[in-house]
Image (cartoon, rainbow, N blue to C red; front, side, top):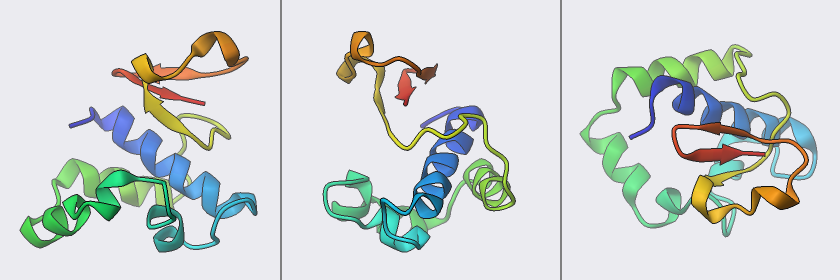
Length: 100
């Protein structure tokens, strides 16, 4: 449901985590890490994969894998309304998602 810039930002968060050393060192490990990415645990990712991935999502994923990054070194995101931005020094909001 994200615009392309949001799709790319989520991909960049995943890649940032893989590279960070503070998270699992594989894409699958990051996505399926306990407490992260609810869609991976509630079956949504599996349903999307079985029904076909939107081309914009595939393009954003390929760009993120190639090093495209529109959010810098951020490792987290959540809905903008769920994040207390007053506690953050640096963040970016993309279509209602707060990346930090």
